[in-house]
Image (tube, rainbow over all chains, first blue to last red):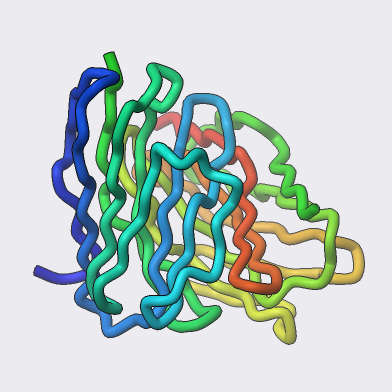
Length: 111
Length: 111
């Protein structure tokens, strides 16, 4: 695998479910990001990790819980989501403040 | 708070035409500005990164310029092709790894 990978690519969940999104980067970067992309809205930065430490939490509801066990892996744990959380969730990585590279995204639908 | 605006929202041009996409930002204290393309339902592909100390970057038929003092960046596409059809996004990176995206310009190149 090369670049940034995300699994699953599609996810349908009920409001009471708990699920996790996974992101892995094979680029040797030290920073990883979660973004949310909703229709007709700009990408919203959710979380940033730099050397496994969270450096940004953009006022994201607590039903989204990030985890970064090492600089190559990033998770987004989901629980008791709302239908308005349905969106494309994108992961990216970069060197410190450098060029960002994105994964293909996870299309999430909350019923 | 940084705000990024992209004009026009949509653009349709005949094949072979040269075109310019615009990106403006309200806070000139940026580290860099990055241009991406996004195909429907897919992740983002990095096109060009301009550091705050640079005025322009070129890659093939693409040229991006940056004028920090006026809060503007442009992406110039030469000799457009149908394969250039996509949504083009710009993102401004500020302090603490804060990245702000525009909503994008949807480009259609007609054969």
